[in-house]
Image 1 (cartoon, rainbow, N blue to C red):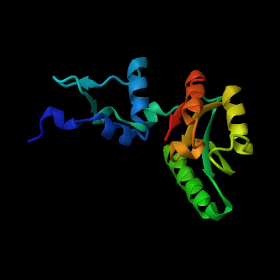
Image 2 (image 1 turned 135 degrees about the vertical axis):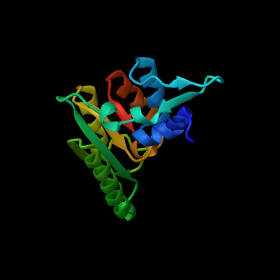
Image 3 (image 1 turned 60 degrees about the horizontal axis):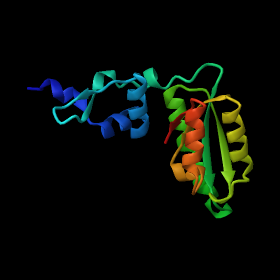
Length: 159
């Protein structure tokens, strides 16, 4: 027999179900967007019935979703294609209209054409959602700074 708590999952499972980071779930809680139940030990528990990605991944109509892919060298071009494919499949599965920006260059090089374009789009307020396969695909060091800019510009980041 199932108890009522069998419908509830921990924050890690909830983040996987929604395709967002644990930090995003905590931010959504602070914003009142998704309020978890709490156990006696004050741990968060999320109702599986309420974890519907389409309810939480709605970028404003006038702002776009950008999927960003990057590899360090020409030798990794196959990996770049795989990243783009993963991002395209994920965004399409969510039902989003999106564009992919791909860069070929070191994660320590801040002068990449695609990265500059991405930052310009974010700063100008044209991006509602940024999707990357892993945070180090954005930059090797300094990704947190880009994420802070995204937060300030109300851009949802999905890793």
